[in-house]
Length: 226
Image 1 (cartoon, rainbow, N blue to C red):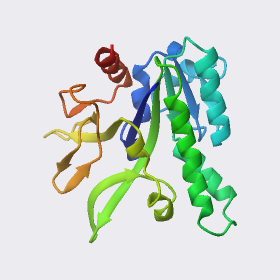
Image 2 (image 1 turned 180 degrees about the vertical axis):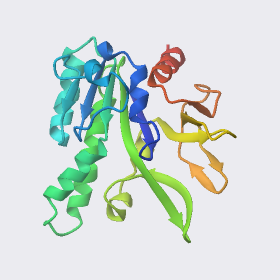
Image 3 (image 1 turned 90 degrees about the vertical axis):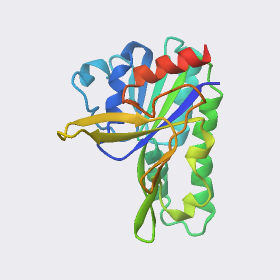
Image 4 (image 1 turned 120 degrees about the vertical axis):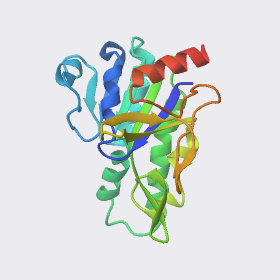
């Protein structure tokens, strides 16, 4: 079973930047939006010529790539599914004229097939689902964060956070001088009245907030699982 990790956070919180801590010779990025990676030197590190960056935007193709990587590219240790929720969004727009609730169940099922496929990949693979978050609001007050999908009709049926063992919440903290520190929350807790939806196995991380470096995350998982 591969290690499945959700990296959740708002735009600009340092989710994709965290990729720079990984070895590009051991990493493949599946990019659903064809966007540039937000760190210096990324174009030379990840590209088609190096065979470690692929633009894929439908769930069946994602599953095919994942299976082939697991079976044939044994040198790969890390798979990044960048903006992977847009696989769901793009399918939704393709099926926008369909009526009824059945398509929402199918959209959730297709995304779950991606996660289930990752669960069946070889044991030495780490799969990172990079997802955007949106506010959970009650009485006009933000009480927490959830995965940004395609609306309440789907959210009522399916929550990706519930089906993976690790969720790191990307956020930015500022010191007294206003200097930003980008990092990941590792444990669930409340910041004021806002619940942070993070979770990791007991004892993997002592700190509640770590640098946004997936290289450090991989090292911690390797040490924890042996």
